[in-house]
Amino acid sequence: MREDQIIRGCLKGKYDCQRALYDLHRVSMFMLCIRYMPTREDAEDVLQEGFIKIYRDLHQYNPERGTLHAWMRRVMLNTALQHLRAKKHLISPLEIENFADLHPVNDDVFSDMTAKELTALIQQLPTGYRVVFNMYVVEGYSHQEIAGELEISINTSKSQLFKAKAMLRKQVKQIFATADAEYENTELQR
Image (cartoon, rainbow, N blue to C red; front, side, top):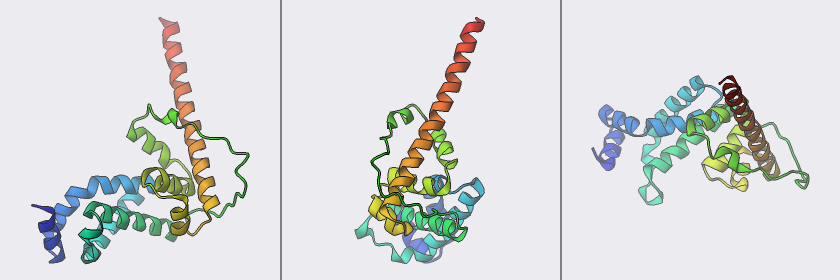
């Protein structure tokens, strides 16, 4: 079934079309949810709630403004953020006015990791760090857009991103240090 046929069927409430839409997009939408939510169960709840909103609001989708997938990602992201707000897990306002004392983060440490490993580390971040990291690094939002969306200052967005990267870098270095130590022990035992 073509995408336009699926959309028309969903607009008419046809279950087979809704199922087709779900099957086509469930994995990518779940990956979005799992990056924002603290637990798999929360991600599953957001996925379900997001698809309900997608089916309900599909009449608002305009193909001239972008792809269906991009529109669905936006709906799912908004659902995730609403879920976090409702559970009061979003960012606690932390203002940092001067970033002169902050050192740049070297992103090379992440290049040897698989997406699954990095996603697992991202899930361990505090909610505010995780949300800003995902919005900035994965979704491509600017700090100004993040600030507007989350109702925080631009500096708070920047500080949350900096802290997220620093925390991830520390976790990755610990993983590599442990792996190196295990390798050395193995070599010594030979």
